[in-house]
Length: 40
Image 1 (tube, helix red, strand yellow):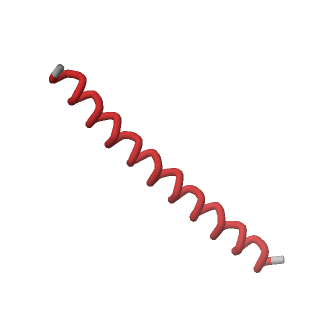
Image 2: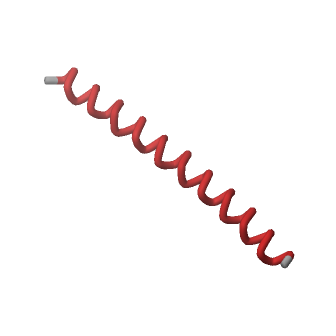
Image 3: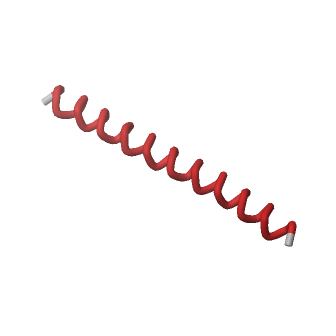
């Protein structure tokens, strides 16, 4: 039972990090697009 709880906590941490990463990548892409449009 303890292993299941540990696994769940690990999964939560990983999915939180993944969501943060997705958010950061989205922000980065949007700022790159803005820079690209400004150059034109």
